[in-house]
Amino acid sequence: DDARPDPSKLLITVAPTGAETSKADCPQLPTTLEELVETARRCQAAGAAMVHVHIRDERHEPTLDLGRLTATVEALHEQTDLVVQLSTGGSVHDPLDRRLKVLDAQPDSCSLTMGTTNFGDDVFSNPWPFITELYQLSQEREVVPEFELFDLGHVAALNRLLDKFGLPYGGRVHVDLVMGVPGGMPGTADALVAAVAGLPAEVTSWSATGIGRSTLPVALASLSKGGHLRVGMEDVLTLAKGVPVEHNEQLVSRVVELGRIVQRTPMTPAEAAELLQVKR
Ligand code: KMH
Ligand code: ZN
Image 1 (cartoon, rainbow, N blue to C red):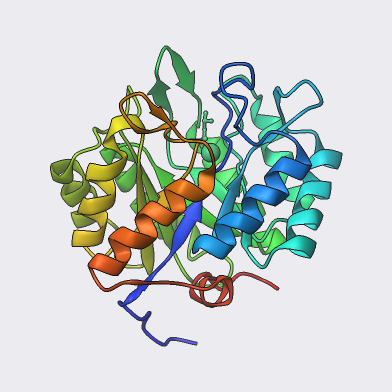
Image 2: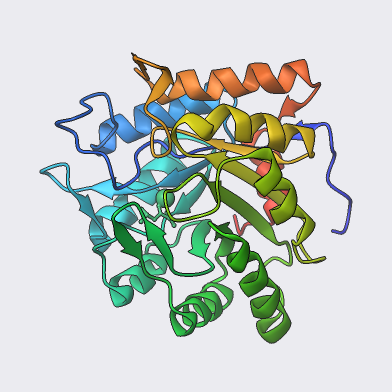
């Protein structure tokens, strides 16, 4: 349906693991399926409605193993109500063909990064032909993409993609601004305002996440502009200088409180599924 989204609602996505932090450096990072499900359940109870998932192998290393991805989607569907979004970004070392295969695990949603970006000392590769192939695959497989924008150029690329290939499966366009990656746009209110100003008219919802120390400035800027939020240990590992995150739930609870202050109520998973028009 075409009902306008309720501006008092706040979509909170949790990104609990990522591909960049090692279990050895951060034992509290959820890397096993049991830890991921426990994290997802607690984050849902705290106010998250969607989970952005990267998985690890038996040695806690990032993997795109299809069997594991499929089992993860199934377990999260069985044991939580969360909208399940699989990362197609993987790690900077994952080849493009393996990243396309992620959709075979039948997630509700998939991330789709709109351009190549320097990523710390590495390169996160997203050539245009890969973007268009992944996008068309998501339309065919009826998976709702979340467009990840790391830079202002990615905003322009999203305009180009929608012009050329039309709307995503479900008809809604949901964007996540990933800010403060060394090599991407900075995690500042100014950059957020510039990115939001350039979003295509088709965009129906957007969230933002700030990496590291930019997590709170970006969250506050996003709330000020009426945006949604992504938080999690993929993006930040401390609550304050020298205070490690012990559980992803702490990051979710903190932004639930920010939302409460500005009179935004966390969306339920069912409301998020409706907003994004995921297949259920
Ligand atoms: N791990 C990064 C290289 C995504 O999930 O789609 C890519 C990333 C984006 O995290
Ligand atoms: Zn990710």
